[in-house]
Length: 154
Length: 162
Image 1 (cartoon, rainbow over the protein chains, first blue to last red):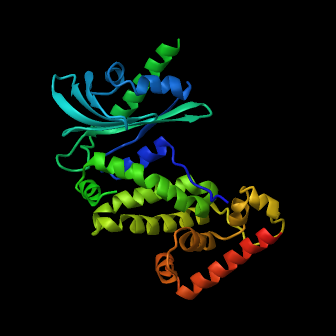
Image 2 (cartoon, chains in turn cyan, red):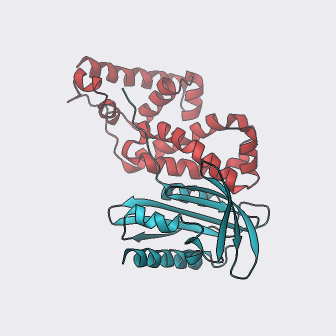
Image 3 (tube, rainbow over the protein chains, first blue to last red):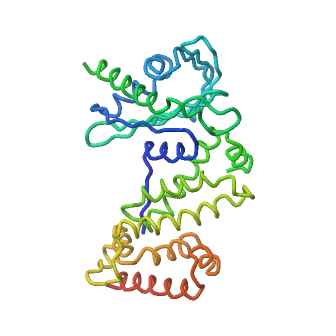
């Protein structure tokens, strides 16, 4: 006899985590492409991440564990460098540096893939973001991601 | 789960919050699933939001699971009530014993119980929570837990006996 179990997809998980971070906004968008196609772009930290995430030009993975936990070095568009702790799994990417936070999630839906993004500049020493511009930045990141996916599918 | 992880999450380390989320989500899915049924994912999401918003209030990190369970049960009952899928404990059309053996019908039986009764079943039978503690968690007298459990088990028995 088995009891029903509720499953939480990565986008719902991102909403829950972002709700605990004052200043965070979750941008969402449906990309009309299969999950595998979308995540091949969204989860490619070294080649693709900098093409759609704001303030991120180049990301290099320094070390990786089998459980998906990575350490990465990033350079922003303005030349600043940062060390990121990263949790990368299919449909899920959560990364944190001293000054930045980025969360990305994706799940298959009938229309394609629902993607969600949150992040921004951290309030030092707290699980909070400086709220200026996070909404527009998230929407722009997902629009760029959709364009990259469309480019790859074309 | 280590107390150090909870403390790091309480201090605002979002990687620790991420790890805590990964650990708690399957556990909350097992609590919310039988109570909220089709609204289970909503219930888990709302429970996680409440847990992370109030994480700083948790004084003893070792008590995380019991504390999270209490929140999850309350959220699951609230969401199940909100979505109004609960029906009175009607026993017409209960599944046959063969269906029970196939393990596809526990859900059928649960659907015939109000969410508060499902919550009692989950706490007492699945989680092994003592009656008094279950009553405190559900904010009802201990006698109510006893009578709900009795009725819920009777429904199961009738389902099994066909």
